[in-house]
Length: 491
Image (cartoon, rainbow, N blue to C red; front, side, top):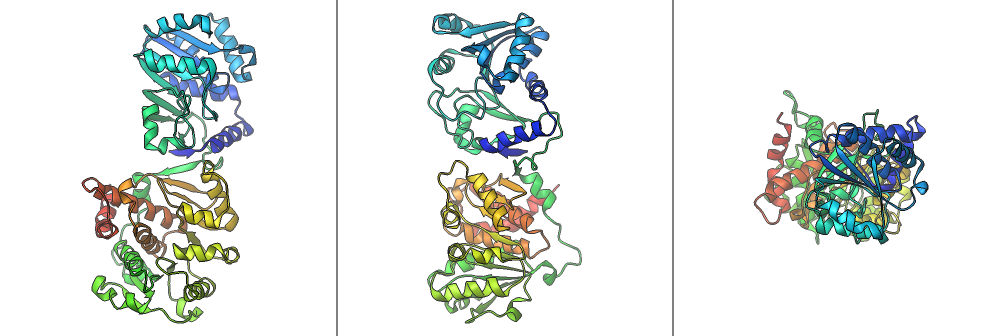
């Protein structure tokens, strides 16, 4: 399943038309998808807007009438000003004597009477392109349906009045009992509060060759995807085979970050994990995690010192003093293996982005929103997905933009994560994720696979714990990781 923001969905539609599909063909296929969801009803009302969403409703009305259904099509305003696709189907409805009703103030009493006898109302007023609250007669009709209609409301693609990107309602938003999302899930539907307006959401893919990724949509990465990607442990695998990894993390002030990151790496199946940290961290590491090798951070890192590692992560709890800065520069300039930059490493990088552009190996950046705003200047969060994808493309890196439904993108392939929950909003979660990602990066996964797989397993493990815990602690999450990976791997 794929997900799109408003801009991405517009680009997807345009891509289809640029590659041989006509609007009439797409509307016809859309109404084919919609038809089965209305077949259990006899008295059917359809709201027809001025654009292509209205064309979907008109085409649907024609097909339902041909099945012997009693269909009423309601529209507002001069239909001569409707879109070309809409007008095409409007003319067919007229020629076939379907019931077309132009709503006006004078006809609202009749519309109210219709609401008492209709079984279902299909919402084709406005699609995902709506950028403000429905006004005038549209707002009045929506309010009447919300207040007086007792049948089912099925939204075509998105309920009128719901913001496609945020899932937040404008004033005068229609409450649907079911939403049939055409081609892809709308990004706003990931907001759990949107379900108040969408009801049950069903994604229907049009019967076409869907160029989802080529057109810029985002893959929704779920358990089935993780199961396919997660590798089985080899019968004759040994510790070096599963990666010799280095975490450059922690300081006298931030000991916990290094400990949590290291435990995340070990729990996720890394073969050998080295931690390079402050003396205060190294002194306690054998007591906390005897499986890891801990070493006091040297004054500098040479190419010779770093060449033995399969993956490196730098940043968790590193600090922002001059020693941390010089440490960061050494690692990024003198290592050649895949690299993860996290936490304080991202803050240092934000003032030295030119270092990123000189890299010739996979680089994974793991910012939360605040850290990303230091890396990339932009205004407003409405188009955050597109901004993130463009950043990854421009800087030739893999971006893991952490938050609800974390985005992972290399600028070409993009994923939204299906796992995780609000109980995981606890300090240290990001450190654990960075360690997990390091283990996968050093263990024979492509960099973008390592990133999205770690993100999914991290969230999935948190979901297991959150079933009976108010909060999810990073320490407990690390203990549960091996069990969670075993569950995911089961067929």
